[in-house]
Amino acid sequence: MTVAAILFAGSLLVFQQPLNWSKDDASRVATLQKDGARIEGEHAIIWYPPSLSPSEAADLLKRIDPGVAGLWRRVGTHDWQAVPKGKIIYYLSDDVFVSHASGRSAVFISTARVRDGRAPFLHEATHELLASNRRDPSSGGPPTLRPLWLTEGLPDYISRLVAADLGFTESGPFDVPMIAAADALCTERARTPDGATMVPYVGTNQRPEVLFTTDRSRFAPTFYTCSLSFVNYLVGQINLNELVDLFSYAPTDMNGRLQKLGGKTLADLRAAWLRRLQL
Ligand SMILES: [Zn+2]
Image (cartoon, rainbow, N blue to C red; front, side, top):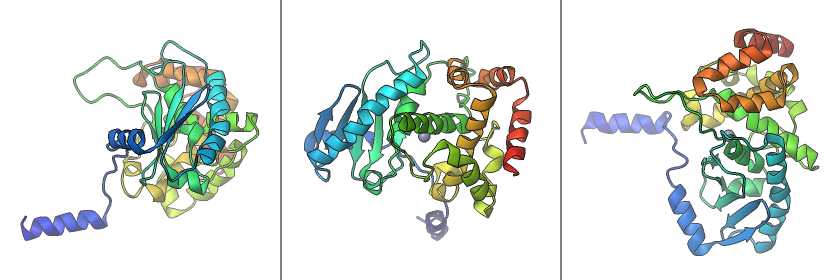
């Protein structure tokens, strides 16, 4: 390595680096199958490491199992779903990583989040239920991605709705205990210098790539909270079932369908939401 290359590598360590939270999933599964234990309910299976006791796992299942059932009731079963109706497998792993879904009936959550009470149990399972097999026709280039504000805001919305139905809260990593709290928290966070940079990504086709880097923690609380707030606004304008049905469309057809449902352009819907929040 040349001196310049070493300096360059050093500066990358100081500045943001890409994150790939799913690259270790196979080893997480292998470790749990070797050293961990499993508890199975009617709607969920939890694999957990020795750092969690069987009674802690049983307590988690008591909440997660009816939660997953509630998610299926809210989302429904549809021919576009990539994940068949059935049990969601939770892999709780001791390493520190961003919780995530897989699109294969499995979700991965760090035990650090389980312990601090901010695990997004239902949010991640909702990603599984919304995983869609509808794609744009291949153009040879990279596939068009669905708008991140929708693919994150809708699971945040549905997870809080179902938790409330069942009498508990899921605050998640960004501490938004209920849907009704999202507007005020979004406004507050969007008025910070870091938060303000996230507002242009909510309700638009732009993707905040910084969320996929080591700088994620500076920006994600605002992006997620404001995405939840905008989805809540859209539910009031349209309705939840129609928003879920957007996933029956290919990514590039979603905005057109949304505009048809809302009777306004997405930009107009977004502007009205921003006015409501006085942003
Ligand atoms: Zn998510």
